[in-house]
Length: 301
Ligand SMILES: NC(=O)c1ccc[n+]([C@@H]2O[C@H](COP(=O)([O-])OP(=O)(O)OC[C@H]3O[C@@H](n4cnc5c(N)ncnc54)[C@H](OP(=O)(O)O)[C@@H]3O)[C@@H](O)[C@H]2O)c1
Image (tube, rainbow, N blue to C red):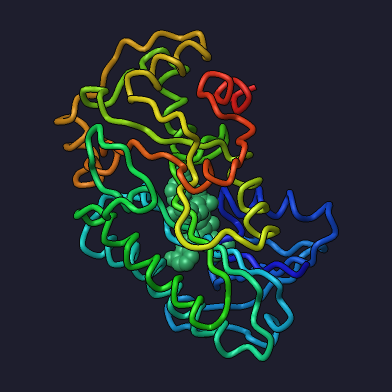
């Protein structure tokens, strides 16, 4: 299979390519100028400039699948107006341009897998959220809604489109868990805010397996919650993480302190999202790491 990946130098992209490579797939990496991606012998670099929509379409001909993971980091700095604009452009505009490019191909890919996030649902307390739940009403929710709407246009081109609403992706070497590890390892970790907010999570290994599953199977399409069926409160997450690391969790980070340090991003950090993978449950999909304690043990091993 010829698979083209955007955001290929990121946490998920790197792991996906490492998984695809030994199975003999042909891999193309959409690479921006200024990307951290480095050339390697087993994948082809394909130029694209997300802000302008310029894409080397000739190099994309013959692709069976496109996995679109690109987007500047949500945690990469305070959400100033300029930063919010960059977050939107790198997701909503890049997706619009990518789908417009796919529409011009002589032979269109069979499937597009496009990233989204459970930030789609906003801050929802104890409500159980499934794919058909209404979107939230904050900045991230609007961003995810508009990002997904651009990806969904690929269906009109006859391309099966799967939108994966990722929860917190657990990996030791990147993402939110890596940020949490440092204070815990120093013995100054603790819950965030009041700890009652729900966290919906999935390991990086499961994310890669899930992407490969939706690439291979013909039926998955539309938005799918990419989280395990075991969301936990932040207090529980904190206590399990401290247990796995054999460190105390005595130092809560109060909301006001987070707000001073992080500004509006705090709302996303403390948002309560109790998300269930209803579509995956319905098709009997089995996660490799469905329970938090075992999952953290495996990730941090
Ligand atoms: N990690 C999580 O917990 C999580 C949770 C929910 C949703 N997601 C979403 O899932 C996707 C993949 O996640 P990830 O953790 O792999 O993200 P990541 O590590 O931040 O990687 C994203 C990649 O996007 C590309 N990128 C950076 N700035 C860009 C820009 N201005 N315009 C276009 N592309 C840009 C970069 O790849 P190149 O340099 O190779 O272009 C970067 O490596 C992201 O869209 C992310 O928002 C992740």
